[in-house]
Image 1 (tube, rainbow, N blue to C red):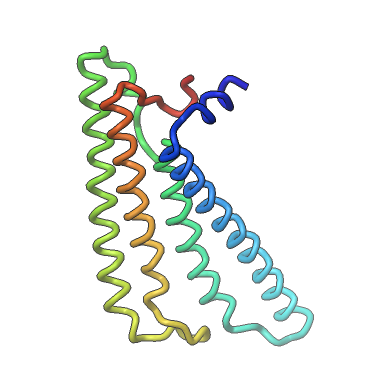
Image 2: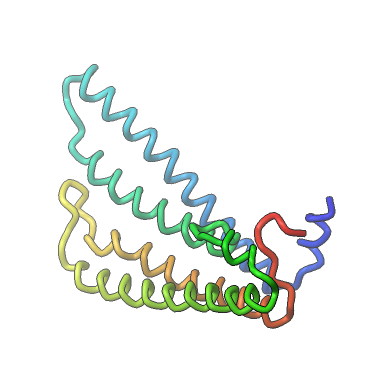
Amino acid sequence: MEHELEHTARGPVYRVLAALAQTCLVIAGVQLVTLISIFGWLVWGRYVLNDTPTWVEQLALLLVVWITFLGAAAGVWNKSHLSIDFIREMMPDPLRIPMRWIAVIAVCVFGGFLAWQGWTLAEKTWPRNIPMLGIAEGWRAVPMAICGALTVVFSLYHVGELARGEYKLTGEL
C-alpha cells in the first residue's frame, strides 16, 4: 500500500517512463508466449504431420533478440538489471554516493553506445532478408537501438533522482 501511494505521488515524467517500461515487459511477454507457441507448432509439425516448419527457427531467433533487449531496457528502469551492487552498498556514504553516480552514468553511456551501434547495424543489414521469413535482417538490430535509447532515457531520469537525493535501489522504500 505504501509503495502504491509513493508511485501515485510521483510526477508525470515518472508515470510515463514507468508505463513505457511496463509496455516493454508486456510486449516481451507476448513475444515469449509466441515463442513457446511456435515451438509447439514445430514439434507438432515435425512429429505429427511429418512436415517440419522451416521458418520457426528464424522467427525464434528474432523473438529472442526482441525479448532480451526489451527486458533489458525495463530492467534498467526497475534497477533490476545485472549489476554487482552489494560491494558498493557496503561502503560508507562518502564512497557509496559517488559510486552510484559512476554506475548510473556508465549505464547511460553504455545505452548511448548501444543505441548508436544498434542503429548503425540496422541500417547496414536492412537490404538483406532473413531467410525463411522474407523480412529485413535489420529487424534483428532494431531492438538493440530501442534498448539503447530507452536505457539512456531511463538512466537520465535516475541521474535526476540522484541529483534530487531521491534515488532508491529496488526494494528500498
